[in-house]
Length: 399
Image (cartoon, rainbow, N blue to C red):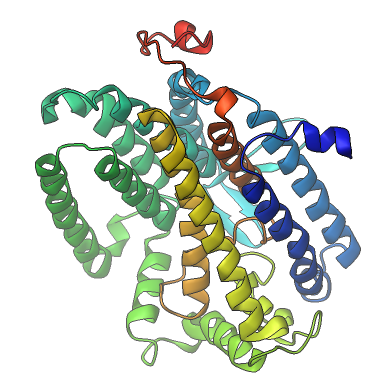
């Protein structure tokens, strides 16, 4: 154990927070997995717990491997990764997979092991690294909108556009976070303002078509419309459309201040996706307001440490890298919690490191590994600069 601890680099607080969240996740996952066992007749509670433990173990192996990679290497890796992820996203749209009763073009199956892989989770990480790389290049010079279309906005548009047909919420989140990173990275405000206004107009047009002629949009347009209508007018929504949201609210209400106790949730057996999208409702029912606020505290503490790491980084790229891949973890957690208490429409976003899942856990761990790599001063980028458009030079570490 001592030998292992000596090999852990980077921010120890982040290591501790991630470990605590992962350890705590076993309790709600084991409790909520009875929904899969007795309602959906899928496996055993112990089997699901073991599967969750294996996924977390592999996730921590990803963190350990990635956090030892020098942070500036990710510049070159994004040059290689972006074309690959665009191909994977395009291929994903041609494959329909059923996961947990949800049939959509979101997943592909990893050959040999047969594990479903949600390509959009990897795409968001790769895109943020790409955007951070470009913004660090133009930091000290004036840039026009025209010259940034191909290297910046086209990749963002392609990634968001390829995610959109099957996963509207993820596409919107990725697009919003890319804009936020551009703002923090010093991209000219006048161009960002134009892009925001243009985006607002396009969003208004999209919503108009969604409500007036949803049949011309992708198959999941009906689901998007239903979720928005349920959120805006919960009293007028159909009983079927409002059922899961109401069950989540009932779970929260029954939790009270201290909760019913570990494993004593009642709503877990009737709340769909109680092990993933709505697991926070089960946590509050079993551990009460204290448990919910405690979990929120640790996510906010993680956000604080991410900001600290970004602030202490010595290069612009490293600062933007940490913000780009670290903040979305906490942002996703806040959205998941907001959905449960009906502050946000249902989005299908899991609770990072807590929800039972597969590649979502691994991609969260990948992002955490990158943050830890950036927090390790030994992996900071050397002062000398070279042409970072050459992936061979970047990968050689001579930046």
